[in-house]
Amino acid sequence: MKNVKRFTKRSLLRESLILGILISSPVLWAQNIPTAKPESVGLSSKKLERISQVFQAEVDKGAIPGAILQINRNGKLVYTSVVGFKDKNKKEPMSKDSIFRIYSMTKPMVSVTAMQLVEEGRIQLTDPISKFLPEFKDMQVSVPKTDAKGETYYDAVPALRPITVQDLLRHTSGIGYPEIIKNPVIKRAYINGGLYVADGTDYDQRRLTPKDFVSAVASSPLSSQPGTNWEYSMSVDVLGRVIEAVTGQRLGDYMQAHLFKPLNMKDTGFKVPANKVSRLAQPLSVDPSTQQPIKLLDVTIDPANDSGGAGGVSTAADYMNFVSMLLNKGELNGQRIISPTTLSLMTSDQLGSRTGIPLSPGQLLMGVNGYTFGLGFMVRQGPGLSEVPGSEGEFMWAGAAGTFFWVDPKEKLGVVLMTQVPGPIRPYYRRLIKQLVSASIEH
Image (cartoon, rainbow, N blue to C red; front, side):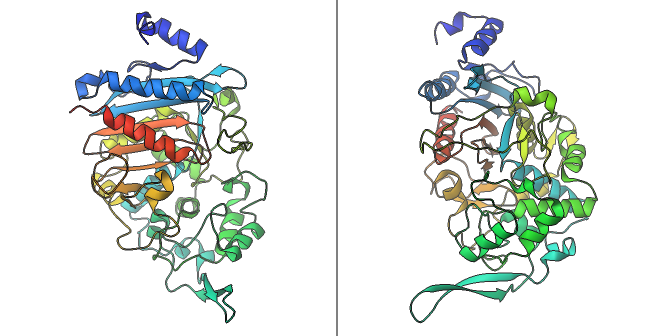
């Protein structure tokens, strides 16, 4: 690292793009966010450099292809790191404008968009979704039972109340994910409806038209009574269909006008256009931890529907604009996206004493305790009771291909990590980056 410091900023960028080594500087990104040195906002440059070293080591040993990290503190972009390869097979170095499949980091953006409609009085959280999508009226719940021989069977019982918009936002709808659900009756229904294809690409809800998607989900039984259990699910994909029903527009078009354009998120959407495909970051061919081939969504083709749960693509710079808006209580560069009171509601505990079966939000995302769920975000319940550092009220989410972000209002901190590292190693890297960034805070 001492030799690197002798380079000028321009030569450092040039060399890093050639060699695929890590770079960090607050001036490499044109994001309309003020830049500052880490020390000016209470962060340690020396400890931030440790992040560079750790992730470079992961690239060197072949664990990850590459990554981009950005940090906003006190409303200023204070750290950017670019490490490794955009496409290791082609020896193409990661670049600051690389585009990533963000999978479930699409969900918070769709959730904010839905809450914009709540603010306009076009949706209420208590609305049954059958008001907008009639197919979801009179749902059935698949309940496991034990017969006289001690064997499990599944019985269908009526839902005690309708699924509401709030249920979709907080994943208490009883809808599951084909890739995760254990109930064989529901799994079979998802397969029959075309929501899951054996040996296909996981979390590809884009394969069905909006009408066929709604029909497939609504005709499948629920895994629990609405409002009773937190279960990660296709709920936000359904929420996207609600937004379309309310607005009369395709989800991506509506979000372009009401979220992406106001926040200058020029590379964010539900497909990578042909003139940007060369910027698409790629994973390793084989998962180092499982030795299984890696298959990610083909985001270069037109999706049959805009998947609000997993279909988004974005850059680190674009997503940092979204995160910076959240950190600034719903506003960025004079563009008010959502009110502070609405954001406060979204980042408050919405689960209470409801169960989290099979996994709580924190266990699913990072393998830790201490987190609940709000409306679109996982939320920290207190400074303790968890295995990673954090402040009460911080909120976050991540994506199946390795992307991750969090916002800590108490520390005035927003962090975006972009990488294409799917598989069981994801919680490890989420814990790792959280520990390393937290350790850089000096005051």
